[in-house]
Amino acid sequence: MSNRVLFEKPRLKTLNGLGYKCFDLHYHTRYSDGKNGVKIAIKKANRLRFGFAVTDHDEIRGAVEAHRRKECTIIPGIEVTSRELYDLLVYFYDVNDLIEFYVKHIRKEKQNPGLLRIKRTKLSFVSVLEAAEDYNCLIAPAHPFAMRPKTSYEIFEEHPSLLKKFDAIETINGTMTQNQNIKCFNWAQKLDKPMIGGSDAHAVAQLGSIINAVKEDSVEGVLNAIKKEKHILIGKGLNVASLYYHNLEVIRKNIFNEIKR
Figure (cartoon, helix red, strand yellow):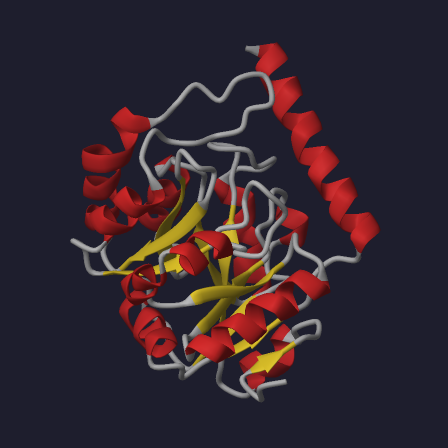
């Protein structure tokens, strides 16, 4: 394995002691399909001394709220789902750019998620990429080796010219199996792309289980460090049984929320 990517549980206290600031780059709040709100996530992040990105599905209220609280370093982000059901993570240097991107390109394109609450937009994957390119941001495909229909790796195999449009690859995702994450690692290494990771937590208990360690504490510093590969990615995926349990819990919660509506 690369000495910049460690498939193990992150030791936050040790990393902080060595001068690193740790960031979980994939977290969902109750504004999309997460269980918890922003306040409890910030409380945990401050207690364990890490920052994070709120990346709700086709939604920015959680990211904007977390950023405006100014209680810890928050990376303004969003996870956009294309009409093909491919997921794209976009991280912004400025929260106002995130708001503009959402209002201009995403808000009016959201589809009715239906009974299973599978969120997606009417935009093609290519359209989302092209829209994001107009902003100062970091773009990465989320969990590209996820189970179908989320296997965004396939579109890059069909259209290799799209590879130049993104800045990094989500390599360790906390809801993927170790085997899926290793496939991402091998692919990113082959393409010589920066590797990022996140818990993809839908509850605060998992927040901080996958981290990107940098010697920076500002949004600009963190994103630039990742683009320059001056960071360490640490974490590991789920076993198969835990993966299926996680997916069933998300589906159960989505159905419950739909019934309550």
